[in-house]
Length: 118
Image (cartoon, rainbow, N blue to C red; front, side):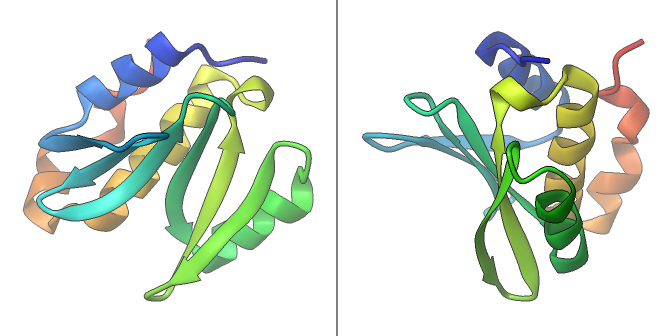
């Protein structure tokens, strides 16, 4: 179970209106000005917005793959180690992070099936 960076990029490309910002050590991802994710190439980790309950469930079930990043605004951000997940699982987590930040009308236009692998 390992997700390659190109697969992460492909998944991001299937989501609508993703804006990418580059910093020295990481990239961040937003939709209509609301941040939903980060990528740190050096550590091959992704930080994703989730509900607090999902954050806690992921971390408690597989602490070798997920860790608490922070909690803010009622959301629990989780660090995902790309070497510990497969593409389908990352697609679900990425879509959920995007969905939690995107406006309802945009979410209605982009169902999960658009980014799920066939």
